[in-house]
Image 1 (tube, protein in one colour):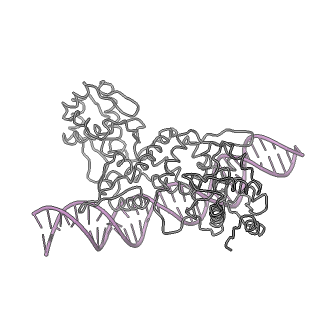
Image 2 (image 1 turned 90 degrees about the vertical axis):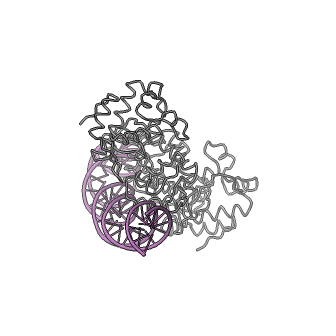
Image 3 (image 1 turned 135 degrees about the vertical axis):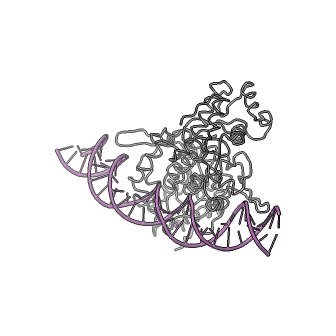
Length: 230
Length: 230
DNA sequence: ATCATACTACGATGATAGCCGAAGTGTTGT
DNA sequence: ACAACACTTCGGCTATCATCGTAGTATGAT
């Protein structure tokens, strides 16, 4: 049992979007640099630095220095447990009549969420994959079948190798602007990375905004039959 | 998995002291009225009303109307689980160099925490009881022995009856201003209530501040050997 | 030694959200 | 019907805090 204001202090630290994004990005046990966390949070490095200092001070993060790099990771499993517990609560939250998500229309269309694609484009892709029967929905994950794996392997993603990773494979990740799931986990990250390699999607350095190129629109249409709205 | 800003939204709702106090007061499954929750939170009824509306909107609280009274309770066990998870994190937080707790010296001396006593007085009482051997400390609770139970029964608290309640009996409650445990649970609430009946402590209507009367200083000294600083 | 990169510190700015006073609506008791 | 009480709504105020630009320190590569 603990007096209320203690709870408020800890919750308020999590209750900032930039910090929440950082903590969530570290949920799978990875250690990320301050610059990576700044990108994940969508803020400048100096802002991220201040946030990280607060999280360290509160014993939510620990830092390891490697030369010029500072690697941050969660201080213990209880942090991840608290984030998970809050996630459950957050998913039971009320449908909002005002749209959630960023006000910037470009960010709503396509942006990064941690290291995978989010926004309208991401959700459209997922729904197409569901239509094609590549993916099915389980409780917290997507399941990919042989047809889907083959299609993505052909696209250049090493699906089998991804499954061997410690990281969750294909996570359903509730999208902030669409309120439906986009593809997270290792598969989601690999898909975004591959699209970047193909020149279909472009991420601007320092920003979480994602641009779909002309080649990307064509490629997504030809390869997966995905028609993106203008 | 859930996009970070969702987590931030839910956490931010918990991250306000008034709301955290309200949610915590409802942790044991009780339903409290809006006015009781306003008192618990230490804010006016109109402020509490706004907070309660937000918590309802977020599906953290449900309300039942009984005539003029609105009874609020937690919407489900996942809320309590999230509060508990955050509590664990909060207890691992860094010692702060600036003093925690309210700035008002009177509130630091003695105040209510939910329905039991908090502040310097409360912690002094607990430590005296530990010295006397009435209480011992366990993980999350205090244990009271026969000598302690007899002494409190003599003081007018029906210890045996309290043990039969559904509510936790004698909780260690981490005090916000003292950073040590004061006595929570049913026993803590009964002790405060008894001290009020005795005229030893006075709570002002609508405030969480507690006044130790002259009779209270004398009574605490004679009955339990507790010397309070001026 | 110089330059690039990673990270931190400082100060000013502006948005936000909690606060309460005033006032209103709804329910209960006399 | 009236008064008391429970609760909600509205508007103004203010403290807080996240933000970024500027500038600095530390590390690594050439």
